[in-house]
Length: 151
Image 1: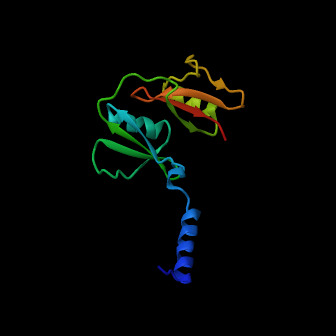
Image 2 (image 1 turned 135 degrees about the horizontal axis):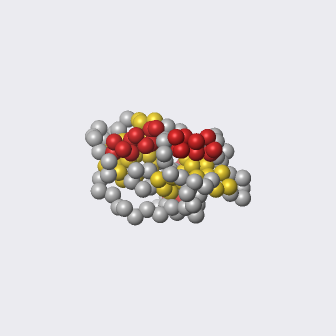
Image 3 (image 1 turned 90 degrees about the horizontal axis):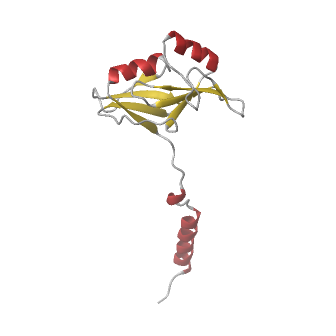
């Protein structure tokens, strides 16, 4: 069987191109969204829009049991009304940064929203060794939210 030089070169070019392709299995996953469960979507909407000032965005499901929020450029969070678990631990939390934790705490006090440090000492701001200040609050369904001033 005789194979022409152009066919050999073409086959070599295809092999070289395949070797240059990145392996799909090695591609890094990219964060898309987080979802939380809510027993009362109206209460959750009030909390996330008035306490964290999150903007409600278009609901792709076009239903009444989801609310979608923009939480960062091209990153979303959605809250789903359903029968939620009642067990929540502080180590499982989401985090938002604000320009000033003391000013955020003033707003929490004005709204009568409890806050604590990592050890769950009420009314305490945590000052981490890296210079970041943080507090923890809970949404209406008990989800823990860290609020810090990390830059």
